[in-house]
Amino acid sequence: MPMDRTAQPETAALAAEVEGLMSAPEPDGVFRDTRECGGGLLLAALLLISPPTPRPKTETK
Image (cartoon, rainbow, N blue to C red; front, side, top):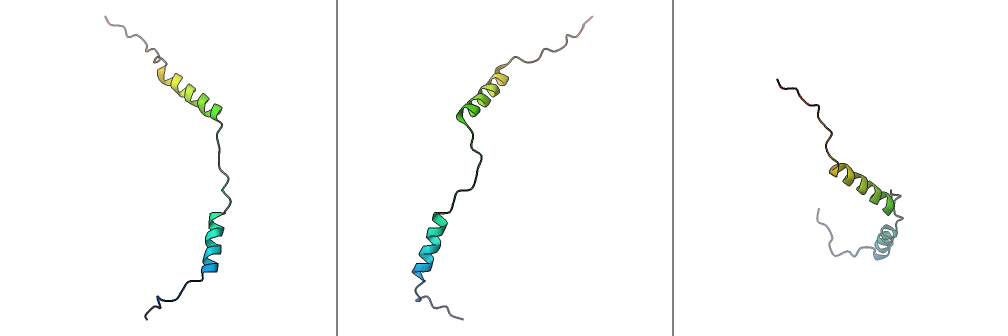
């Protein structure tokens, strides 16, 4: 069945739908404080540069 490609879309309904999508409220998200991120980064850096745990000495005869 052929489609009529010359029909004009309903611009008012389409514009209202687009406007509704653009002005949709943003979803609630998890936002982190800069100090909290800095503290976590500092802790991770300290763990990475800390010396390794000492190994027990083996006795050789």
